[in-house]
Length: 162
Image (cartoon, rainbow, N blue to C red):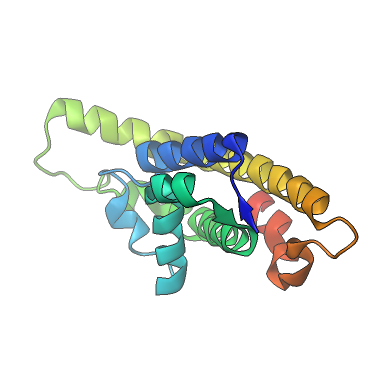
């Protein structure tokens, strides 16, 4: 069954915009490459944040959307553990380099706000997950919802909160 809910599309779009602007930008990209995530997780994140128009046209399969939400959740979890404590160094703010004064200021803003921006991403992703699960329950009727068939979804709270 395909999901073509305008509220879901709007939420995914907001999450993707926030991710691209505040998390995976030119100042943090080098740090993000240090994350220990498998290639399938990175592919799911890229699909979730870059191919929104494709899904707007065709709709989302619930199981596919859940796996994309899980991938982004794993990203948030790992970013909090691996990047947040070391971002100043990973983004190059600890070493003198040849960047313009305006780029240095922007880089420092990105580094200083990274934790807050991860929290915002986490909150938006959680809201989307709750909305999808609610829609899933309605669509399932007397059958088990799709989320009950994906065991790792039980970990989503831990991924988004810790």
